[in-house]
Length: 217
Image 1 (cartoon, rainbow, N blue to C red):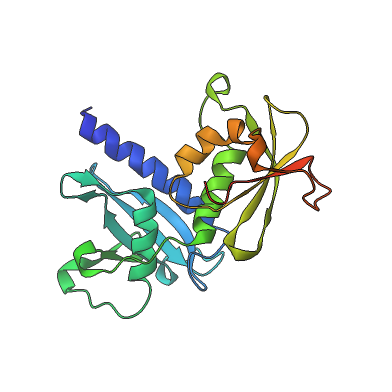
Image 2: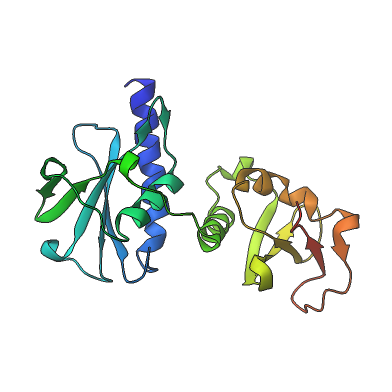
């Protein structure tokens, strides 16, 4: 297997994991993810199936094939979410050559050049952050020394994480703003929980020892 083929397979895995968030929560309005399919013949694409909640009748589902390559680069799983929202919103006219069917479902072959991507929302970033904290992908011996004990949505788009750590005792709350630099935040969290200049000793929150403000980090 070539390195290019492996990268495509790994990205298809990432897309499937991210889109699984939208099986029980709508991707947009009343549309839920009802399937994620790797394109056949090792094509560098992924097919996402949308429909009403709990729908499984093929004729009532719509599949979209989204190419994973953009020039010499690969799209991200977040790009796929943005494109899916865009193609399923408003009016899009597909030429006959880009409309087909698969397994009884209408299949639209998306041309990203003709679509304006929808923005990845704060809730999307929040769900991604919580998933990474609750289900870390690294093996146990390589995981960062902080665990998610709880969370609370706060005003102004902030998210309060309740964490414990190998480096500090008890439950520590950390206010963060979910966004694109998740990898850096996840790596830094264990040490940030103990930074004294960020600590509020009286957070008015009985669920933690103290609060760390990371909203400007």
